[in-house]
Amino acid sequence: MDTLTHALSSALLVRAAEPVLPKLKALPVRTRLIAGMTAAAFPDIDGAIRLIDTLTYLNWHQGLTHSLLMLPLWAFFLSYLFSKVARGRYSWQLFLIPASLGIAIHIAEDLITSYGLMLLAPFSTERFSMPLAFVIDSWFSAIIIVGLVMSYILPAKKYIAGFALVCLSMYVVFLAFLHEQAKDIGLAYAQKMALADAEINVLPQPFSPFNWKIVAVEGETYHILLVKLASGSSAMLSDNGVLSKMLAVYQPLTSAKWQQLKRFGDFPVDTALVREAWYQPALADFRQFAVFPQLDRIDYSEKGVCIWFYDLRFKFPLLPPSFRYGGCREEESANWYLQRQKGAFWID
Image (cartoon, rainbow, N blue to C red; front, side, top):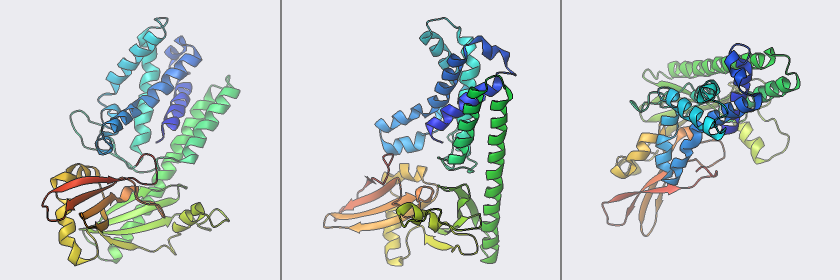
């Protein structure tokens, strides 16, 4: 999730923990909240990897700084740093709880997005994910903000922050219910189409917790459905702008249409060339990153050819895909090299 949501949720968690963890009160309220919020923002410091290379960042983001095994070490490091910043007025032990809570809630929140965390780093690069929420979820953030505001207005009511956390947990349970509902739709489709070996994947989408992308993977074919798990109009805005059009793409199940995409394209005449590009050593890092790789397009020019790929996780309605990379080869050359194409957002 976004860094601001991480920081605010940590503040809420620290507030909620005060009644059951008396040691927290050894620090002034402002100090422990700042410590918790800073610790919650800390794991995203791995964004500095982008200074090296975007693809390196994509492969190592949510790695060491998001590891459960590394959490105690990071908590100790931050606690020691906070104590130094406070010029020794408070021992590092007093910062250990808010630092640990901040990092822990950051990991928990990123775990429910679709990117995937290396929870066992540095001993394993395997990624874990329970894709329940989109990376920016306005309802998720709103629950946190309301809880913080109410706990500030009514500081004597110690239960408010805890109640807000309960509401947040219930919202996550609700997202899990929607996830299972979307997965059942995918399973029913696979059974109907006799896709016996299809792997059903469900990805949360932007704008609403009811918007989902269902991906049934059958060999090198993707069966994709953009569905809205709620009744009523699919467009929330009355104008004809881009946002309204994007919202309208997510249709109720009764009107949503499945589409099929071939991983290496629809034209057999191009498939051999696309496969050759995809399996080149130059694209090894992108192959490591892409969970659902898909051909974007083939560009021919006087200089040669570039074959572009993207990951279906980062393709949203009416927008160009994010994180597009291509294998390019100059005319009459056997050597392929990697190219990057920027998308619609700064992070691309």
